[in-house]
Length: 420
Image (cartoon, rainbow, N blue to C red; front, side, top):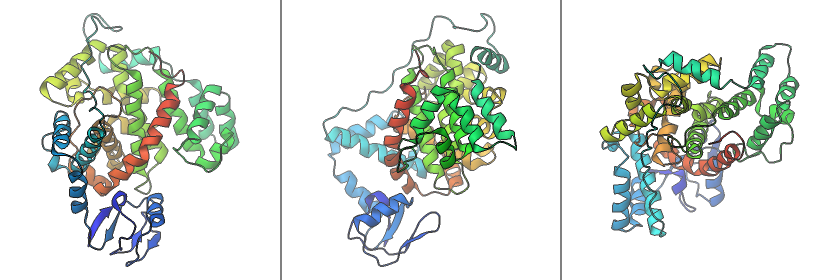
């Protein structure tokens, strides 16, 4: 008897233990012989692994790797070694993530596709686009300058006012959102995407509110509104399409992982993942030269970019992003998640920040977009243990996320939200 990841289950395998969904729903008894439809049901209900007779995951993984030639595996391993920490085996999360990346790259090579190019360093601008010509601005001055440059859309604050009014109803929220045609269009595209997977098309904001809730819709409106605020980022520092692809990936991974734990808000964690690096956009717009210096320092010394930011600026993008959200009077839970996504054990509650931390590392590992970070951050077992999840959850998470990431990235990039 052994544990097998849901993606590796096959028709004809016999269950050694009953299968129960994360919410406690009984799905199949011990001794049942699996059929394809059973495995599909497991995936729908969020089952990530099952105990089966005569099989174990380690043997299946060895067989998966044996499919590829030694040369393809060597090239894939060398490609990953540049970005992954050397002590990857000391983290259950990173060990499984590394395995998934290795298989994906070996598959690329086996199909005759080249390995992805490693990102190059940006050229530092000759001078800052904004800020003082003398001493660098303090964290407070930097954020105050950003707030003056990018006022937050009024529609979001009108939504918040309605939410705080005990006399308001779902229809009032729908009325306020519907006043902004651009926001309405983006929200409807989002709720009609595979992100939610509703069986029939949602044609109105009032229907969307009824299905996902007022607070949830408000949180999604927040995320879309923040994306709209950031324009004219110097292309020499950031490819904004790639930046938002990474951010969306982090948001989607956060939302899917949130489903594995009861009591977590999927929409809040999606938006937290979407906005986790918003402080880096402030640095790119306000201090592009210093950010480029930090990126160069990170590559030279093989340290995480947020650590290099602290050395160059005396603060990092998490502090900038957290203070920006606080200045905009964004709900404190989101501020906390953005502020502590690189130090989740310092957040309260730690589990939500750990979700964003893990999602960010997963997006960087898989090289889905780029937000400036070159090296995969080390995620220790204490952070991963906060989630009480098996590493087997990662493979179905990645498979489920791929379509959603593309759809939502296209949604943002096809709008006026991103301009270079």
